[in-house]
Image 1: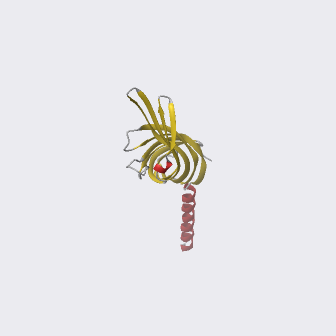
Image 2: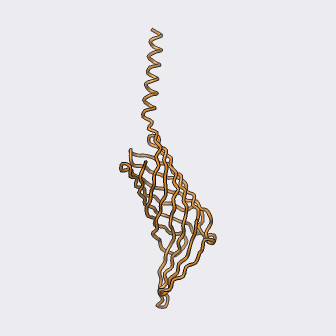
Image 3: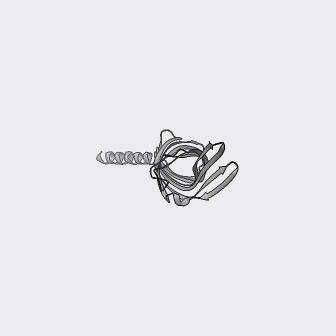
Length: 195
């Protein structure tokens, strides 16, 4: 009798272990993604600028939790228009970044995830473009930017089969410019394909 009880307990333990292993859906996915950005810089009187972003993402998911990493090119910047004594002046500040976010993804449903994490951004280049009454001048201003910066991304994503729609806001933590307290704050909307 004791032998049967031990065998029954061992069989039950094996069944529980197999069920828990089967229910823990472990998946690794990756894919390309691209979309638009709307960026601004804090502590300036400039306006938001529309840009674009593109790159690749990876995710390792276990049930309701996923950990993802991305490598993204991102065009950011600010713009301004004004008229001084009848002279129209348009100024654009363009900055190119390589952004590397690492995100924790919390799946509230099978397809809907809330996400947050940390992002390192590396300035690849920057230019200032000024247009005064049709005359355009362009200057490289990368030296005015810090080489690296840190942001906190917060967002949401939804999977439509292999298509992933992602919306997030990147809150700048460190200063973007060497002078002043300006930080990059960027909203981005992307679509990706998951493999």
